[in-house]
Length: 256
Ligand SMILES: Nc1ncnc2c1ncn2[C@@H]1O[C@H](COP(=O)(O)OP(=O)(O)O)[C@@H](O)[C@H]1O
Ligand SMILES: [Mg+2]
Figure 1 (cartoon, rainbow, N blue to C red):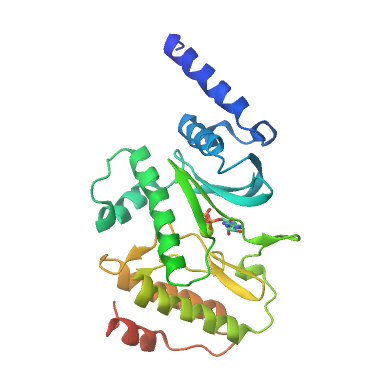
Figure 2 (figure 1 turned 60 degrees about the horizontal axis):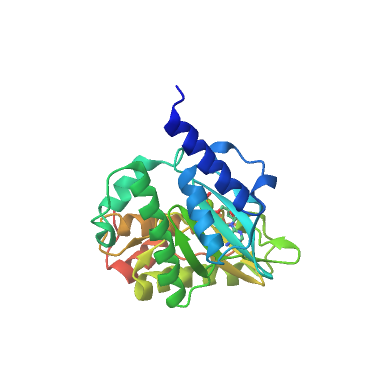
Protein backbone atom coordinates (compact mmCIF):
# COMPACT_ATOMS: atom_id res chain seq x y z
CA UNK A 1 0.00 0.00 0.00
CA UNK A 2 1.36 3.40 -0.95
CA UNK A 3 0.89 6.43 1.26
CA UNK A 4 2.44 9.86 1.59
CA UNK A 5 5.21 8.54 3.74
CA UNK A 6 6.23 5.91 1.18
CA UNK A 7 6.15 8.48 -1.61
CA UNK A 8 8.35 10.87 0.36
CA UNK A 9 10.70 8.06 1.18
CA UNK A 10 11.01 7.06 -2.49
CA UNK A 11 11.62 10.66 -3.46
CA UNK A 12 14.37 11.01 -0.90
CA UNK A 13 16.01 7.78 -2.04
CA UNK A 14 15.83 8.96 -5.68
CA UNK A 15 17.38 12.29 -4.76
CA UNK A 16 20.21 10.60 -2.94
CA UNK A 17 20.77 8.26 -5.88
CA UNK A 18 21.20 11.11 -8.33
CA UNK A 19 23.59 12.90 -5.98
CA UNK A 20 25.99 9.98 -5.76
CA UNK A 21 28.20 10.23 -8.80
CA UNK A 22 28.64 6.98 -10.69
CA UNK A 23 25.81 5.20 -8.90
CA UNK A 24 23.44 5.31 -11.88
CA UNK A 25 25.91 3.29 -13.95
CA UNK A 26 26.21 0.52 -11.40
CA UNK A 27 23.03 -1.34 -12.37
CA UNK A 28 22.99 -3.09 -9.02
CA UNK A 29 19.97 -4.72 -7.49
CA UNK A 30 17.88 -2.12 -5.72
CA UNK A 31 18.13 -3.82 -2.35
CA UNK A 32 21.91 -3.31 -2.23
CA UNK A 33 21.45 0.42 -1.97
CA UNK A 34 18.71 0.83 0.57
CA UNK A 35 18.15 4.16 2.25
CA UNK A 36 20.78 3.64 4.95
CA UNK A 37 23.43 2.66 2.48
CA UNK A 38 22.61 5.65 0.30
CA UNK A 39 22.80 7.93 3.33
CA UNK A 40 26.14 6.43 4.32
CA UNK A 41 27.50 6.76 0.79
CA UNK A 42 26.18 10.27 0.46
CA UNK A 43 27.79 11.34 3.70
CA UNK A 44 31.14 9.85 2.69
CA UNK A 45 30.83 11.58 -0.67
CA UNK A 46 30.01 14.99 0.77
CA UNK A 47 32.98 14.70 3.12
CA UNK A 48 35.27 13.88 0.21
CA UNK A 49 36.16 10.29 1.22
CA UNK A 50 34.72 9.09 -2.08
CA UNK A 51 34.45 11.22 -5.21
CA UNK A 52 32.67 8.71 -7.49
CA UNK A 53 31.49 5.12 -7.27
CA UNK A 54 32.93 2.59 -9.73
CA UNK A 55 32.07 -0.98 -10.62
CA UNK A 56 31.87 -4.02 -8.31
CA UNK A 57 35.06 -5.97 -7.48
CA UNK A 58 33.11 -8.68 -5.70
CA UNK A 59 29.48 -9.44 -4.86
CA UNK A 60 28.56 -11.83 -2.07
CA UNK A 61 25.84 -12.71 0.40
CA UNK A 62 27.31 -10.71 3.26
CA UNK A 63 28.83 -7.79 1.41
CA UNK A 64 29.68 -6.24 -1.93
CA UNK A 65 33.01 -4.57 -2.62
CA UNK A 66 33.23 -1.73 -5.14
CA UNK A 67 35.99 0.24 -6.68
CA UNK A 68 35.63 3.99 -6.16
CA UNK A 69 37.53 7.17 -6.84
CA UNK A 70 38.92 9.41 -4.22
CA UNK A 71 40.24 12.31 -6.24
CA UNK A 72 43.12 10.82 -8.22
CA UNK A 73 43.30 7.62 -6.15
CA UNK A 74 41.33 4.40 -6.13
CA UNK A 75 39.72 3.09 -2.96
CA UNK A 76 37.75 -0.06 -2.15
CA UNK A 77 34.26 0.40 -0.69
CA UNK A 78 32.80 -2.56 1.18
CA UNK A 79 29.06 -2.42 1.71
CA UNK A 80 27.50 -4.86 4.16
CA UNK A 81 24.13 -6.01 2.91
CA UNK A 82 21.56 -5.13 5.52
CA UNK A 83 18.99 -7.56 4.10
CA UNK A 84 20.90 -10.69 3.24
CA UNK A 85 23.84 -10.76 5.67
CA UNK A 86 23.80 -13.58 8.22
CA UNK A 87 22.54 -11.40 11.00
CA UNK A 88 22.08 -14.24 13.54
CA UNK A 89 25.70 -15.31 13.24
CA UNK A 90 26.90 -11.71 13.45
CA UNK A 91 24.78 -11.16 16.55
CA UNK A 92 26.14 -14.31 18.14
CA UNK A 93 29.77 -13.34 17.51
CA UNK A 94 29.42 -9.71 18.50
CA UNK A 95 27.46 -10.42 21.69
CA UNK A 96 30.54 -11.96 23.32
CA UNK A 97 32.86 -9.14 22.21
CA UNK A 98 33.60 -6.76 25.04
CA UNK A 99 34.28 -3.92 22.64
CA UNK A 100 30.63 -3.96 21.52
CA UNK A 101 28.52 -4.54 24.61
CA UNK A 102 26.15 -1.61 24.23
CA UNK A 103 24.90 -2.00 20.69
CA UNK A 104 21.19 -2.30 19.92
CA UNK A 105 19.46 -5.51 18.92
CA UNK A 106 17.99 -4.66 15.53
CA UNK A 107 19.37 -6.08 12.30
CA UNK A 108 20.57 -2.61 11.37
CA UNK A 109 22.30 -1.99 14.74
CA UNK A 110 24.18 -5.28 14.47
CA UNK A 111 25.30 -4.73 10.87
CA UNK A 112 26.44 -1.17 11.58
CA UNK A 113 28.39 -2.43 14.61
CA UNK A 114 29.87 -5.20 12.46
CA UNK A 115 31.12 -2.59 9.96
CA UNK A 116 32.69 -0.62 12.82
CA UNK A 117 34.20 -3.87 14.08
CA UNK A 118 35.86 -4.62 10.75
CA UNK A 119 37.24 -1.08 10.64
CA UNK A 120 38.64 -1.39 14.13
CA UNK A 121 40.10 -4.88 13.48
CA UNK A 122 41.86 -3.68 10.32
CA UNK A 123 43.28 -0.75 12.24
CA UNK A 124 44.53 -2.95 15.07
CA UNK A 125 46.15 -5.35 12.62
CA UNK A 126 47.76 -2.51 10.72
CA UNK A 127 49.08 -0.94 13.94
CA UNK A 128 50.73 -4.28 14.72
CA UNK A 129 52.51 -4.12 11.35
CA UNK A 130 50.44 -6.69 9.44
CA UNK A 131 49.80 -5.99 5.74
CA UNK A 132 46.05 -5.28 5.44
CA UNK A 133 44.16 -2.71 3.35
CA UNK A 134 44.57 0.60 5.21
CA UNK A 135 41.13 1.44 6.69
CA UNK A 136 40.11 5.01 5.82
CA UNK A 137 36.64 5.58 7.29
CA UNK A 138 33.23 3.99 7.79
CA UNK A 139 29.65 5.20 7.94
CA UNK A 140 26.72 2.95 8.83
CA UNK A 141 27.24 -0.23 6.75
CA UNK A 142 29.84 1.29 4.39
CA UNK A 143 33.58 0.85 4.91
CA UNK A 144 36.17 2.69 2.81
CA UNK A 145 39.67 1.22 2.65
CA UNK A 146 42.81 1.21 0.58
CA UNK A 147 42.41 -0.56 -2.75
CA UNK A 148 44.85 -3.46 -3.01
CA UNK A 149 45.80 -3.63 -6.63
CA UNK A 150 47.90 -2.14 -9.35
CA UNK A 151 47.49 -1.07 -12.98
CA UNK A 152 46.64 -4.70 -13.89
CA UNK A 153 43.68 -4.80 -11.50
CA UNK A 154 42.85 -5.94 -7.97
CA UNK A 155 45.37 -8.30 -6.37
CA UNK A 156 44.21 -11.92 -6.76
CA UNK A 157 43.01 -14.09 -3.92
CA UNK A 158 45.69 -16.52 -2.77
CA UNK A 159 43.84 -19.45 -4.40
CA UNK A 160 44.30 -17.80 -7.84
CA UNK A 161 47.75 -16.31 -7.33
CA UNK A 162 50.96 -17.53 -8.85
CA UNK A 163 53.40 -17.14 -6.00
CA UNK A 164 57.11 -17.26 -6.51
CA UNK A 165 57.99 -19.09 -3.33
CA UNK A 166 55.20 -21.00 -1.51
CA UNK A 167 57.40 -21.68 1.53
CA UNK A 168 58.11 -18.00 1.98
CA UNK A 169 54.41 -17.12 1.58
CA UNK A 170 53.38 -19.81 4.07
CA UNK A 171 55.95 -18.58 6.59
CA UNK A 172 54.83 -14.99 6.13
CA UNK A 173 51.17 -15.84 6.74
CA UNK A 174 52.07 -17.91 9.80
CA UNK A 175 54.01 -14.91 11.05
CA UNK A 176 50.95 -12.69 10.50
CA UNK A 177 48.85 -15.12 12.58
CA UNK A 178 51.45 -15.05 15.37
CA UNK A 179 51.73 -11.24 15.30
CA UNK A 180 47.95 -10.90 15.23
CA UNK A 181 47.75 -13.01 18.38
CA UNK A 182 50.75 -11.63 20.26
CA UNK A 183 50.71 -7.97 19.32
CA UNK A 184 47.26 -7.06 17.98
CA UNK A 185 45.64 -9.52 20.43
CA UNK A 186 43.29 -10.67 17.67
CA UNK A 187 42.37 -13.85 15.82
CA UNK A 188 41.25 -13.51 12.21
CA UNK A 189 38.60 -16.22 12.46
CA UNK A 190 37.90 -16.73 8.75
CA UNK A 191 41.33 -17.21 7.27
CA UNK A 192 41.43 -18.99 3.93
CA UNK A 193 42.81 -18.69 0.42
CA UNK A 194 39.76 -16.47 -0.29
CA UNK A 195 40.54 -13.93 2.42
CA UNK A 196 44.21 -13.48 1.64
CA UNK A 197 45.24 -11.41 -1.37
CA UNK A 198 48.62 -11.72 -3.00
CA UNK A 199 50.42 -8.79 -4.60
CA UNK A 200 53.89 -7.24 -4.88
CA UNK A 201 55.31 -10.62 -3.85
CA UNK A 202 53.53 -10.68 -0.45
CA UNK A 203 50.28 -11.85 1.14
CA UNK A 204 47.71 -9.38 2.58
CA UNK A 205 45.01 -10.29 5.09
CA UNK A 206 41.51 -8.99 4.31
CA UNK A 207 37.90 -9.54 5.48
CA UNK A 208 38.35 -9.00 9.22
CA UNK A 209 34.75 -8.37 10.29
CA UNK A 210 34.59 -11.58 12.31
CA UNK A 211 38.04 -11.22 13.92
CA UNK A 212 37.82 -11.35 17.74
CA UNK A 213 39.96 -10.27 20.67
CA UNK A 214 41.74 -12.91 22.73
CA UNK A 215 39.23 -12.74 25.60
CA UNK A 216 36.43 -13.86 23.26
CA UNK A 217 35.22 -17.42 23.95
CA UNK A 218 35.75 -18.31 20.27
CA UNK A 219 39.36 -17.05 20.15
CA UNK A 220 41.23 -20.36 20.68
CA UNK A 221 38.86 -22.29 18.40
CA UNK A 222 39.18 -19.65 15.68
CA UNK A 223 42.95 -19.78 15.96
CA UNK A 224 42.95 -23.54 15.54
CA UNK A 225 40.66 -23.34 12.53
CA UNK A 226 42.74 -20.56 10.90
CA UNK A 227 45.89 -22.67 11.29
CA UNK A 228 44.16 -25.77 9.90
CA UNK A 229 42.90 -23.79 6.90
CA UNK A 230 46.37 -22.46 6.21
CA UNK A 231 47.92 -25.94 6.40
CA UNK A 232 45.19 -27.48 4.25
CA UNK A 233 46.01 -25.03 1.47
CA UNK A 234 49.80 -25.29 1.78
CA UNK A 235 50.52 -28.88 2.75
CA UNK A 236 50.98 -30.00 -0.86
CA UNK A 237 52.93 -26.89 -1.77
CA UNK A 238 55.57 -26.65 0.96
CA UNK A 239 56.48 -27.97 4.39
CA UNK A 240 54.06 -26.93 7.13
CA UNK A 241 54.20 -26.73 10.93
CA UNK A 242 52.08 -28.91 13.19
CA UNK A 243 48.98 -27.01 14.28
CA UNK A 244 49.36 -28.38 17.80
CA UNK A 245 52.87 -26.90 18.09
CA UNK A 246 51.72 -23.41 17.16
CA UNK A 247 48.74 -23.69 19.50
CA UNK A 248 51.05 -24.77 22.30
CA UNK A 249 53.34 -21.83 21.56
CA UNK A 250 50.52 -19.23 21.47
CA UNK A 251 47.85 -20.54 23.85
CA UNK A 252 49.85 -22.91 25.98
CA UNK A 253 47.42 -25.70 25.13
CA UNK A 254 45.36 -27.12 22.31
CA UNK A 255 41.66 -26.13 22.27
CA UNK A 256 39.07 -28.74 21.42
N1 LIG B 1 40.80 -3.58 -0.26
C1 LIG B 1 40.60 -4.38 -1.30
N2 LIG B 1 41.29 -4.23 -2.46
C2 LIG B 1 41.08 -5.05 -3.51
N3 LIG B 1 40.20 -6.06 -3.52
C3 LIG B 1 39.47 -6.28 -2.41
C4 LIG B 1 39.63 -5.46 -1.25
N4 LIG B 1 38.79 -5.91 -0.29
C5 LIG B 1 38.13 -6.95 -0.84
N5 LIG B 1 38.53 -7.19 -2.10
C6 LIG B 1 38.03 -8.26 -3.01
O1 LIG B 1 36.68 -8.51 -2.70
C7 LIG B 1 36.51 -9.86 -2.25
C8 LIG B 1 35.48 -9.90 -1.13
O2 LIG B 1 35.91 -9.11 -0.02
P1 LIG B 1 35.78 -9.63 1.46
O3 LIG B 1 36.24 -8.54 2.37
O4 LIG B 1 36.43 -10.96 1.59
O5 LIG B 1 34.19 -9.73 1.61
P2 LIG B 1 33.20 -10.99 1.78
O6 LIG B 1 32.63 -10.79 3.13
O7 LIG B 1 32.21 -10.81 0.69
O8 LIG B 1 33.99 -12.27 1.66
C9 LIG B 1 37.90 -10.28 -1.81
O9 LIG B 1 38.10 -11.67 -1.89
C10 LIG B 1 38.79 -9.55 -2.79
O10 LIG B 1 38.91 -10.27 -4.00
MG1 LIG C 1 35.83 -12.85 2.13
